[in-house]
Length: 428
Image 1 (cartoon, rainbow, N blue to C red):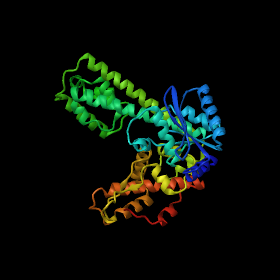
Image 2: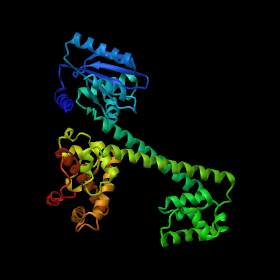
Image 3: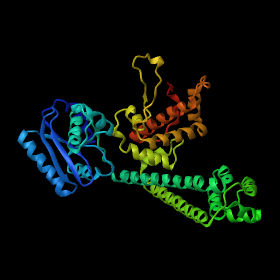
Image 4: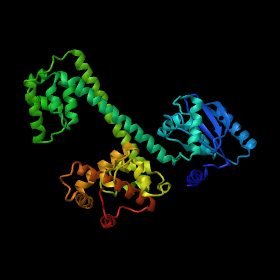
């Protein structure tokens, strides 16, 4: 909280100030470039190259101390542009040393580059000066340093996101790389029975092999549990499709590739289950997680995702900031138009994963929870013919959900259905 107040004070007073030394840092993998200047645009030291280790960091601080004493500047602020994971060691070190650190957005850096001298030329020295120039204008972001359990939760969610992408990539390789060539009828009947599909790809990629096998034996080979008539009917359709398949002849290489992809996908799915188990283990130790689970539509993953993004709810000063975090804030081009003729759309400038998760929560709640379903139908009342109105209503519900979650965490209170229904809802 103290660092956040310092940041707010910096944003408020840095323009034209005579007390700040601004250190703009261009981040690289092995060596960083630093620029030293003032909010008035005065250059104090044009370039300092220091290594990405403790010796280099101390070299940076020695230069800062010298310039502060030489020019009688009582305050220093460090700024950098987030670059992959390269910025995290120096950002962490500066923070634990007690220095004020801010970030600048990549879009702002790109737009401001041409404004400095009317050129788009890019190099490390100019990039560090660009960062310092943006800080001098107050166009910077707060560097969040959350608690260790939030950092661990974010790391696990990042691993889960990577594994989900890998699982999707493997599924597409199986369906688009193998089935469309050798068994296209199975691709059309893929459905949601993942285990059965993978068993067929592993053992019966060649539809001719299915046609040579008795149906009851085929069912026993590809199933582990009996799920009734629907399961049997689906497998019967696959069995019949194999009799008249138009797929190419299957060779030993295709069989090997199918078995390899299935094994990788099953291993990835197992890793996903283990990651979710670790996420739950961490979250169950946090009271805030239990509060979020009381919101309709919030399951273990959505609650963990929202908790990791909001972290300390007191750092948000208004609901608008919370909505912007997910990129659900409305923007419209009104230049030369009246408000009636401008169509607002969500900005999509926030966290895409959070935005998608909130939309899925809103979708579930609008179907299965009476209170949210009532609000949803109130939104679309007399507007059923409007194109995309259902999606707009659920996006509005998603924005409402993130505000509800923020309020609950800030006040340490569970979800109150009565307060939800008493609030008026408007959809633009």
